[in-house]
Amino acid sequence: MSSTALPPSQLRRGCPGARPGRHLQGGCSTVAPGLARGAQEAGGGRRLGRGARLTLTLPCPPQPVNNADFIIPVEIDGIMHQVYVLKRPHVDEFLQRMGELFECVLFTASLAKYADPVADLLDKWGAFRARLFRESCVFHRGNYVKDLSRLGRDLRRIIIVDNSPASYIFHPDNAVPVASWFDNMADTELLDLLPFFERLSKVDDVYTVLKKHRTNS
Image (tube, rainbow, N blue to C red; front, side, top):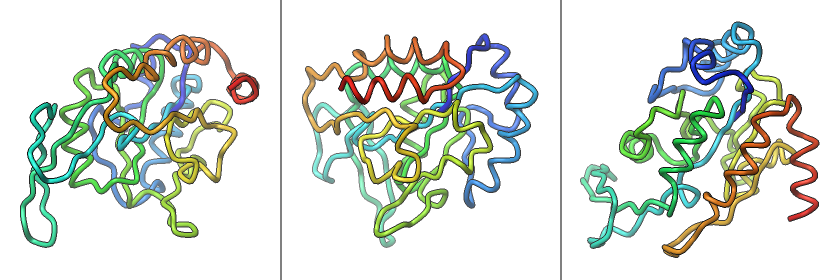
C-alpha cells in the first residue's frame, strides 16, 4: 500500500482505474498500467498494501463460532462450507484512517472466493482502491510473494503491511511487519500503529523512516 500527501479527494480522482472494491485478476500486469497513470495524474501517491488473513481478520474452522463477525459461504471441492471470520480489534478505526491517508490496495495470498466477500464486509469505507489475490502473487520457493514492483508505483512511496515476512521477501525495506493475530481481543497493534502511519503519510521517501522503525523495534 502506498501513502500520499495529497488530500483524499484528489487522491481518489487520481486513480480512475482502481475503484473501491474492484476485483483485479490475472496478475499485476493488468493492474500496473492503470495505477501508473494514476500516479502521474495525481502527482505520485503513496500506496499502502496489506494482507487480510491473520493481519486484519482470523478465519476460523468450519465449526460454528458464537462471536464471529462474518459468516462467509465458500465452495471447496464442490461442497459449500461456512467460514466464520473474526475481526482483529480496532480494524475498523485502522481501515478508515488508512483510507484517508493512503491509496490502499488489498494484496493477499488468500483465494478470491474467500477474501473478496470478506473485503466486501470488512471495508465499509471503500478504503481499498483495488484488490489483488493469490493469482496476483509470485509463487517463489513454496511461498506466495507480493511483488510490489508490479504495482506501477515508485517503490519509495510504497508500504506493505503484513504478518508474514515471506510475503514481502522481494521488498523487505518497504515492509511494516505486524504480529499475526489469533484470538486476543485485547490486541491493540493496529491502533498503536496509527501515529506511525500518520508520520509516513507526510514523507516523500518511506525508506528512511522505515529503516529507523526497524532499528528501534
